[in-house]
Each structure stands twice: as structure tokens, then as C-alpha cells.
Image 1 (tube, helix red, strand yellow):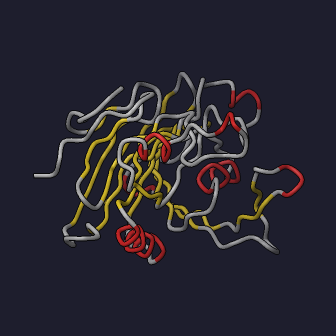
Image 2: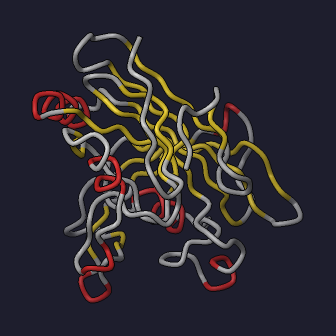
Length: 235
């Protein structure tokens, strides 16, 4: 049996830990790694490393995005997980609440393939850049329509990992995410107190044992996120 996760602070939940990996649920509003300045040092990596000093960053979520992340324990496990992400052996799914109506149902999956580049005068924003942008692909499927909000609950699978990819792709097709202060027009940004984007599922092969690992986290921010199975830790 893996060891019982220890407690960490500030609402960050750890769901699984063993000698190789740590799987956690990041709340919206918390940085994944430290930023520039003394006021940006509180983050996922710092909080987890205060408890597990061998924890190492493998991937990130935007500060405004909530949901599942995995960290490695030690340099060897970090290298193996980095390779898994780089070769697309890690599957990530997200849920979001977007403005407007999208087709609903299993047959409604569509592919968004738009190149993304840095909006240099307005960093950290990104833009669709056909000349210099990096190829970026997202799959999107409508789940349910909320007539009162005039918004669609969608599932998302990024096939590439560009910064702000899901947010800018959805904005580019005319369906910005509710609460998105960077990419949504003001009336859509004001429709939610936080970005309605959640990293809802994560699956990969365990870097040490090779066993398949899968974690799911329900919800996209309208209610407090609930994980399938009770979390081991919550502060």
C-alpha cells in the first residue's frame, strides 16, 4: 500500500502519493510554480515540497485553472514523466463552461487546430498566429446546455500543450470560457467569479512500475470540485 498522504496547506488536496509520484488537486487562484516577486512565491510546488522535499515539477496548470496535477519524486521519476508528457503518453481531459451553444452529445466531438503564439505587447496573453505560432490541437465536445446562462458545459482534450491553449482556442471559435479575465469579453468574464475550467482527468503509466494510473475529478467550477472517491487530504 502507498503511504498515507500528509497534509498541505491552503486548500491544496493530495489524493495519491507513493515513492515515485504525487497526484494532487490544485485550487483556482494558486500558481503552479513560483513567479517573479516576493508576492508570487506561494504555489503548488512550494507547498508540496515543504512536506515532500523530493517533489519535482512535471507540468503546470494556469493559475486560474483548477484540477489534477502530478509531481515526480526525485530526478529519475521526473525525467521519466517528462518523457511521457513529451511523447504524449499522458492523457489529459478538462471540463469547462463556455459562452453560447455548442452541439451536444458523443457525436459532437470536433477538432480545433489553430497555431498559437505570444502576444508580445500584451504578455502573458497568447494569440492565434498563422505566421509564427506553434501548431496546437484541441478536441471539444458539448455535454449539456444551460439555457439560463446561455452557456455550454464542454469536455476538452488538448493534443498539444501550449500555454493558455484551451482558453484561446475556445475564444477563437467564438465560445470563451465564463470567468476568463484574459480572453473573454467583459460581459462573459463577469458571468463567473473564477475561470470555469477544470483539469478533470489524468491518466498515464506509473514511471516506476509501469502500471496504468487514472484519476478523475468531477465538476467545472460551478460547485466545489469533487473527486471520485474521498480525498485523502484537505486543508
